[in-house]
Image (spheres, rainbow, N blue to C red):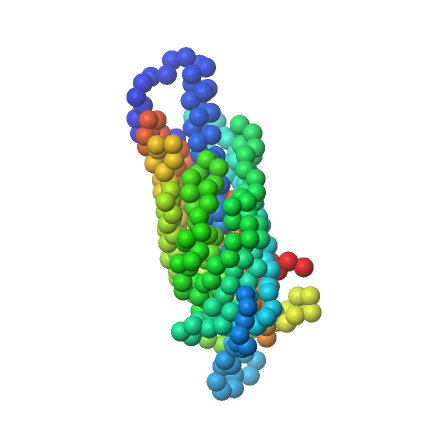
Length: 315
């Protein structure tokens, strides 16, 4: 760990302890927003998917989002995070738990994309720090509804309505629902695939709210393993190896926080082939990086973040 500068020399032991606690507490408060940003994802009018023209090569499947008309699909996403920080030679841990539930229903199509109605069922975040536990249910967003556009391959085309629904996270400032959906739906291969096929995708995810901005660059090495039944549904199973970088800027309590690091991870996706929506996705990542804080107390220290996120249909 290194310091950028200090305004004064701390001589008294008790002041030193308070200084450490203040810094760790500040980082802990910011942490809930960091997780949710990554982490951190209607009425239909007779809409049905336009089938792929022509016959597919034998043994292949074409994966596309459909979300059948008049069928609401409810998801619950759970994210567990362990963040380890080293401050003045001491190691501190922050445990965070995030739950985000929503219901998705097709409401037609627009410009070749699916128009989806999203209802937020629950948003809960809790974190355990050396100073105690904070967080709880974010009641401001419960029951909120917005429409979005999703491409058949899983790209979030339009989240403008979600951006208008804002809420406050304890100690982290204002955010909006677009932050939770900017990469909510797993991307699908553009071409038909058969068991054993591999492909590489590169993506850049940018998001911004009044109190934070984030830039994620990720490369995913994907492999289609074949069909596997989940609760009686034929699902395409895709695995992935992930590598990338994440940069995040936060503003709180008159301070600017810059978080930067690289991560590796794995992913597993089960996608209902006929029905046209994902059944379950599990992503595990590990990030090594640094936190730099500028303001009344300028500082810099390393951090490691382990994250496991599961998003699955509610039974």
